[in-house]
Image (cartoon, one colour):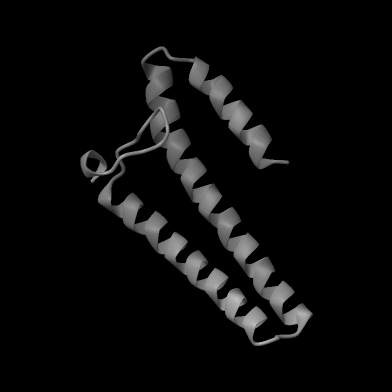
Length: 101
């Protein structure tokens, strides 16, 4: 999988098939929710109904972040620490600060 895809980031990560499918499934659901809101706007849906759907998308994105962060800590961070690259902890702290804004 990772070999056939290019990333705009300076680092890459090989994911298990299970992790990959779970993350893609979550993103596909979120994408569908976004399209649903777009449709609601196009059909002049009531504001409160749209806001409820936006709240659901925010919850889905937060859930996605939790899963991705847990996987990151269990794999990338743990492996880097074992290999003596403790700067990864600083990188993690910066990421957490961004997520908690």
